[in-house]
Image (tube, rainbow, N blue to C red; front, side):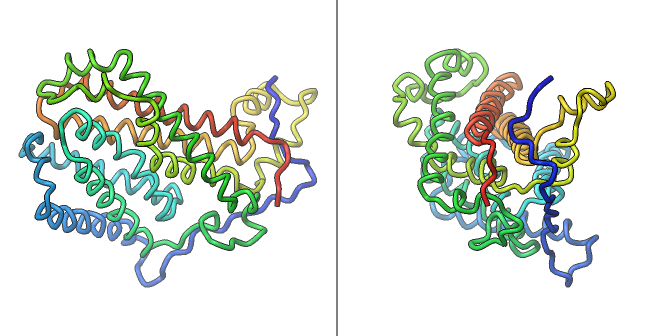
Length: 334
């Protein structure tokens, strides 16, 4: 039987977390459609403005997709991304961090191997973040974990969450994991894989001349986004009714079904949040990277897009695993 280090005492009080507030001026049934339309409008407007100021180098590697089903598929995935945040009870900052992490691999590919300028990459990330963060901020309040002075009853470990040194260390840790995965791939399977499955690559020198320190430094922003999206919400979680139920588990009297459930999903709320968010990040990274790489870059095979996307999904899982290890403590501070 698996032991859980983070089980709370049965006498602990489960703290219900209120749902994120939403403005009442927009009917419930119209809020998500409003979010999707607003996000797509902001994205289209900002990309149109950016195209006037030097992001035209993207056009040299993009392939046109004129079939209605191709355009509909990309729009459907955009709506799905927003739906993940909306029904996953994320706030604007959560989705902004998820957007950075899931959109960055595609733009990193263009910058590293297709000679697209770094300024173009950062412009793309900023536009993608703003097109999700702004609509969410207008339609949903921020969660307690992202408030400057959250109620003590709703957020655990507030002193740790507000500790700048903890934020820096966990950001660097996540950046290091991303850097090691990418650098290891550069030194191993990736160059040959790219040559075989990516027709029209312009420059492979980035893989052969990469330095681990510089590669890792390039993921500092991603590291900060990862600790904000994965580590902080998990560390700030208060025990819930599920924790109390699992704390009462008695292996001597439990049925087979109860024992199986305890070993499969008998984790603390902290661990459950981290597992769910890590799975969300891995899936979003794989889908976003795979779809955009295959449908928008000239000469990319499906196998190539899938392999590139799988590398980033694996990195996301590793980051989540490292954070699980770092946050695996017995005491929940208030």
